Length: 200
Image 1 (cartoon, helix red, strand yellow):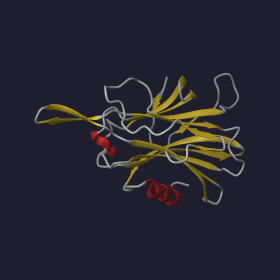
Image 2: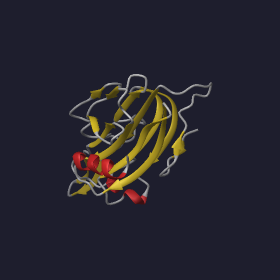
Image 3: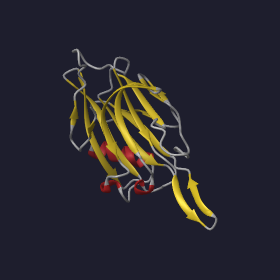
Image 4: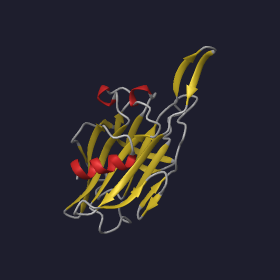
């Protein structure tokens, strides 16, 4: 059963039958914002952007995977979703980052996942915004390990960016730590700068 992630929580990457997971997915799901106008209710599209940066042991950024660069060695982004679910929650992730740990570059020491609201729409206004860490592919969920409920967590209210969590290598084994911190950043490049300064 999936657990609700809390800051600093470590997630085991061990398979049920033994051995380490080799492929992980970070999926983000969200909806359109409903507004009331003169002629009734309207839906406003929301563009959330899931991204990740790879870093070496000296905290140097090696590669950035985001809507403008959808792949790196061992990492694949599903593509930019510019609207969210306009007709309600379909239960599917709008953007997914798939990481194959066997294919990631040998110089990669940490992989940090971040989320930005591209148009600056407040997380508190975005319906059913959530993140999940799971086994599977961008189109198939095999097992959900953990979730973040952004839409219903007051600590994200007033923010347009956050650091989701990180994969890191220790004693040649990959581990995952939840972070779940909102940041004051407005742009992806600023969020990555915050990651380098505070989370590596």
